[in-house]
Length: 500
Image (cartoon, rainbow, N blue to C red; front, top):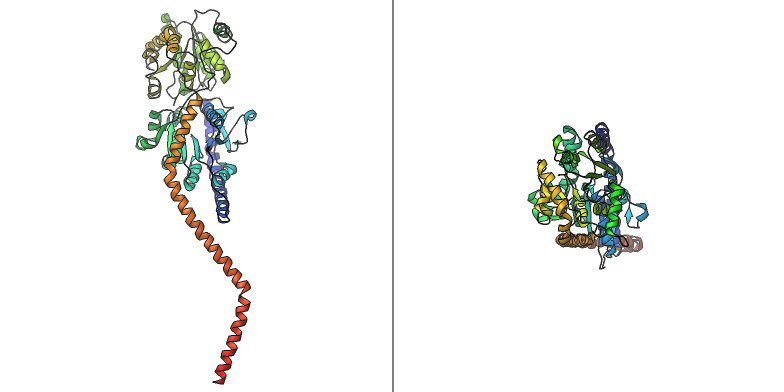
């Protein structure tokens, strides 16, 4: 598997070097043509202003369904909620759900398979259509979802046109690159990512945001504190503690526990993990908690259910079998089935320190399933005042993990009934729109100066065009007449000279 990933990564680098620059030049050419045509339109008096109550928003992202990870879910939810409020949201992406595509969705970013997750795709160039849209159309704000290899193109174009750009960052690239690639390649990859994405974002973006401020500071830099924001997060309103309409909660829970986990009684506790099975997630760190104490483990009783897929799945299954652990691998569970899965479990556990937010933690607790999570900057910022400390643990301490799982199983569901978690995408989208408005307001002075310059250039260009046209008309209509008059005057002068 490592060799395959390394091969794909090398292919991606070579392809980028060979194809990226030529296509980048083509994209800039298309953008310039679009801008030239807009200039011609201004000269001939075409209307360019917009006076509407809604906002025209352009979202550029590599991450959309049918991808199932958190960033794709987040982007799709933002777009759906903002459109429901009447805003015109245009989306360019590498993939989309063809059954839900609208006239504002454009799967036109040239892309390659992601070498670390072959089910997803990475956009390596803006493409002609996006270049045209950026050059020819007007947007109130552009939202660029990072990581993105086309950030440098998008940001330079928007900076030229004085369109405010909101960049949201969702992946800890330094951690991921070192986990998946050897030292020389990972350092080169980080350098190129900084060159084509991170540096342009710090230089030209109006606002930079991340799911948590601590990650934003670490990723972008504390020196940019004034332009850092926390991008709002939420989840779908189907994630709730109550069973679906027409279904008894106890009956649903009993049937699901038998169907999903093979548990036929209420006494057997079920611990669930929902995540991509990859090295940076640290899934295997939970196994010692379920090893009996007489064999050197922590002696947690019950079933451990792991939902998800990824490059580490085979190794995890082998390790669980060798240790004879009560582990059930569920594979990829459809997103619409996750609420039932959370309601059927007794507690949720994450071992990951690589999260920038951790949507599954929010989803589980909205369904009344207590979440056991490690101490780290991200989880501390989000959950330190919202969940009991007894549900938290230090990643290096095995005894703390087992104690946290026991505490969450015993008191977790009752605590969440008394202190419910409610954070939906509707709320998150409304908050995101407020940040867009802040972005637009911050950009107004630059846009006003640009507009004044365009007006002056427009008048100058019109004056030049009128002067040229007048000169041409004069030469065509009056030059022959002036020539005859000049000849007559010359003859009269010649006669007078001769007479003298």
